[in-house]
Length: 457
Ligand code: NAD
Image 1 (tube, rainbow, N blue to C red):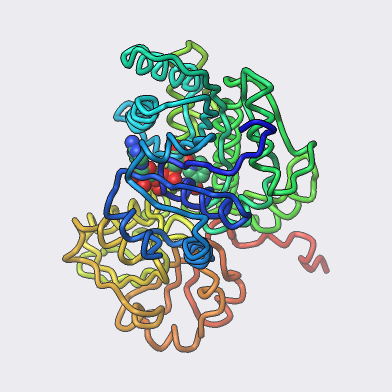
Image 2: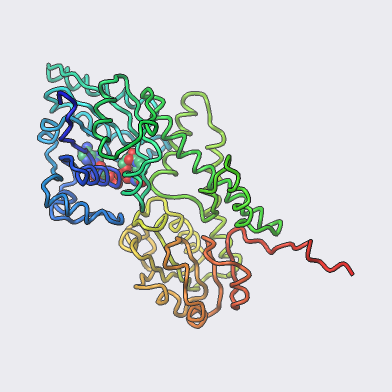
């Protein structure tokens, strides 16, 4: 480690964050050992089998296994003792009360600490409540005390901002790298690791541990709020006859607002926004500083998913025995992640009313099959878009996979029993779809008032 030549890194947890982090760092020339306690996963990875769908990741993994820069193991002792920098990227799922469940972090940290053998920099990339870095320190001290040894170490809070579906690019080209630290030594070391990303110094936000942890939660909560705000505006657009797409355009051109995350849809899902909003709300309650906007966001997002199901059942009338064609199940395109996907709530609600489904997702069917196991008698998984439509009473687009943007509408009309088209991602325009003979229901695409076009003579 002297002279800050960091060559060997351990990453604990090989999920979306850990596997991408480890593989991309290996691809940039570092020696990386990825550790996971799931031996099935590790055995597969050793043979180049990537257990998640993330575009481009399988090639990077394969390339770096061959180059022997990327090693997969369940042997945390070996990984810890050989590496100078240890990154933690295990899951922090929600506990029953909404707070982040830290059991995986604690287990990983304690196990790591039981094998510390010299100075290490411990980098936490998992999303954790404010104050967790201090807890990590405490767990390490306890383990060292139990062993009757004393080693120097530094903790860094280095939250990850990559998005599933574009994780490799996001990791390679981050908007910013947030580093919370108590020592400049550890900051210098992690910057040495990230040197391979060719970052400008201005891209680093170096701060204390608590602020770094807060930046991650506050960022995710803000984005979740922005999405939800637009979902509610979309609902209002429908009532007043405005078109949410024009509204979003008009708002997004204001640089103070920005154009991203202004698209309405069936509500946010995934492994981050739902759990992180609940976790920060719980932190607020515990600290006596409730974040009411975030509390409201969580509730409004639940309502949004139910509203989508209601939109469909209102239009369809009695759903008993009806068959619905469903396109897209993952919580967003380019991922197989079904965690808290809106499709789950929507299908559950419609199933309660007696609907059956023919569904298609380019990647997520296997995962959906697992998460929607309780609806197995009602769901038929299809091998392409058009197969879902045959003899179905209506079509519902839930996830905006690119290939759904240009459906053969004539074929859709022929295959469906009735040309009813629910577009929960606004991939199509209402006026165009109506011209084509569809009963079209989007999100926030109200019937336009055209007051300036009214003939006055
Ligand atoms: P994940 O569930 O996909 O993967 C976690 C991995 O950790 C699993 O493979 C699990 O087997 C492993 N693990 C659990 N306990 C372990 C232990 N004691 N030792 C070794 N391995 C262990 O999780 P993820 O989606 O990669 O998320 C990880 C963290 O990063 C979470 O805190 C999440 O909030 C955060 N995050 C996720 C994303 C994302 O898009 N998924 C983005 C930014 C941040």
